[in-house]
Image 1 (spheres, rainbow, N blue to C red):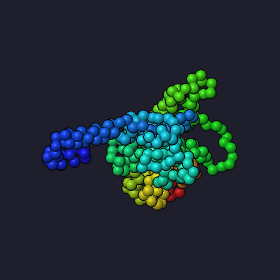
Image 2 (cartoon, rainbow, N blue to C red):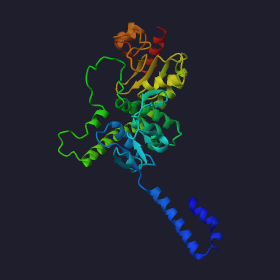
Image 3 (cartoon, rainbow, N blue to C red):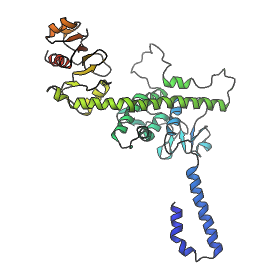
Amino acid sequence: MHSLVTVGSILPSLLTLRPRLFTRFCFSMTSAVRSVEENESRVKRVGTHNGTFHCDEALGCYMIRLTAKYAGAEIVRTREPKVLDTLDAVLDVGGVYDPSRDRFDHHQRGFDQVFGHGFATKLSSAGLVYKHYGLEIIAKELGLDAGHSDVQRVYLAVYKSFVEAIDAVDNGINQYDTDQPPKYVNSTHLSSRAGRLNLDWIDEDQSQEKENERFYCAMNLAGGEFLENVRSHAKSWLPARSIVEESVRARQEIDSSGEIVVLKRFCPWKLHLFELEQELKIEPSIKYVLYEDERGQQWRVQAVAVSPDKFESRKPLPESWRGLRDEDLSRQCDIPNCVFVHISGFIGGNKSFEGALAMAKAALKL
């Protein structure tokens, strides 16, 4: 486009040139324009190594082809430096991390890139692609602008719930800080399943074509689960967060203590609650969450755990209520229509909202 504008701006003066010179100039400019157009329409090529493959480059290749820049890109599997140098992007091979040239290797000495945003896991090629292109991919799936707050939330949540594990497994990072050997082997996670798609030593066909075919299967496996995770966050996780946030902000209307939250509609709330407490700097912490159990036709009052990975409650329902049911429980706590309180005190029920709220308020004082 720039070349065409330049030609138009100088065309009057060019007309004064001799016909042969003018023709030659037009031919050269037309060739330049054609070259630009061909370059723009050329199918991009994304490189990764051949041989045994892992989940990270399979997922990275899948994700990068979800971008506008690399949509429909050809995957080239090689370790030949001269070939890699000619490619538009290179993942998991080449010994270079340079996002300005779409070079995403993580094996070189001194590589220490992490995702940021509080995450400290060393990145694999999948994490590198996600770090630089994840916002575009998420925005496209959500149908929103990349700067939208929901895009940023899902971007971080998908890394936490999906991509980080791929990075950790590929870099040999243990899930727990312990020197003890694991009590069991887990070969059912995505990285293991992708790895099992490699050619087996007993397979008769060990050709490059067959190996590439298996790699494409690994790409589709990892990529399919990635998109499923993204779409689950868009369809379920985001709406749930909105419900929990609205309920948390309205908690003072329920009880002046601010320690009781009522969900207007039941949804997965635990992780959202902990994150919102941190984001909104809530103090004192929330002790009870009330929600309607439509199947049981009752209201539940649930004690909030001390942390997302703990069963211990911040303030369990009173010990004198635990293990009681129906009339016995109603008499004990002097609240009508009680249904039950779990023996551990982490949850209870009442036939009405008013009764469940009365249980939560009484539990706060006991």
